[in-house]
Length: 508
Image (cartoon, rainbow, N blue to C red; front, side, top):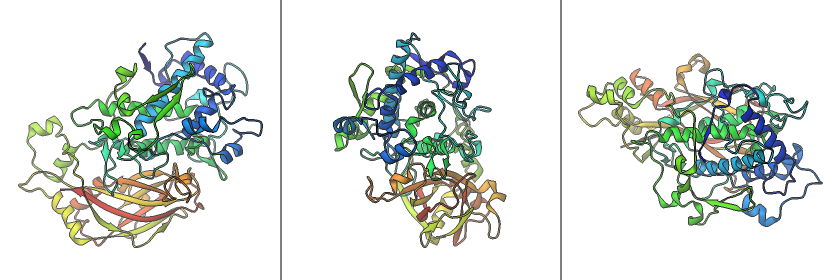
């Protein structure tokens, strides 16, 4: 039976039937014991589990019986982050969760074609937390709304939960390739080639923005404790998690609606999953008591999976490739400009342009760093941006914040590039390169963790700013000023360090 996932704001009211049934089914799952494979907390632990953190937040008590070690090994702490498996693993996770919710709804006398709604925080007037999730009261009672959790603090950590439009973007939808590179250039729409990765350090475009940022903006923190959505080990316990991920899943399908340049990987290592390269398989507990094992190759067709979305229209993504070429002065045929000029195949020639001389500590409101640039490499960028008789293949340029370490996943930062000497970054919104959150940093910073405590590495494309500097004849400098500005609500006393800030060119 094919189903359609719909926008939560278009269901017909705050407590329209699909949301009310969702709440009733969540309540039923929450009533099950932790060690029941279809229980609410068991499903949350599939995404991540930390015994101490769960206990502090009140989701684990001395009276709980944990699943057997074999069950924990098979199902728990599977989520794929910082990997090209991020999107297909989460699609399967959503499908299995949706099947469990639907089974509960049918038991309660509800519709067998129920589908998980999505929250599209990019729509005008829809960036606030959907009202059904915002109050402890609901049509079924007072003070016991299954969709409400107190551990949601919002971007200012004051309990007002919304996604600030300026903090999220859809630039990833412009990525022409699913798979990127791991060495300083574009990470691609879906991430760099990895094995099984529960908490790797480098994110694909869509995972970095808007995925990670929405987690941080919704969860926030209170004191030293994160909101549920702010930490991968607790995010799956928040009912809004599933609507957020349904939107991320929808954006993957929107990206795939342009098959001319947007194609999922054909590499067998991606199609067959990490089990074929020495990693774990993707497996979920189903409502009938069976285990479902799946591969990324089974996650690429919504038609085959039996569902779709009510809105797959293209998303606004800013400047197109054709507009960039025109702005730089490349004389493109009118027909090519009218057709949109598909971007060139992303070259994998990545070269370091410059780097900060040492590590950086992100303390206080903002931190300024001067990134020295190699003259010869900088001139290669300028040459590629200058129209000539040759083929139009201007470089793309990327800023990397490498090996970011810290203890709080709830912080977020804005990054400005090329701010003039003596000027304030907030006075130059045109030089805002992007924003990033520290979602996942706590685990990534643990020396005994999966990746030895190397922290997170965030890659932000700064091509548009470099184009501006080039056209304004301000790129011929020995160093670029980079400002990292703490977002509203960030813990400005948090000990966050960056191993290095670097700039790379990617081109011919």
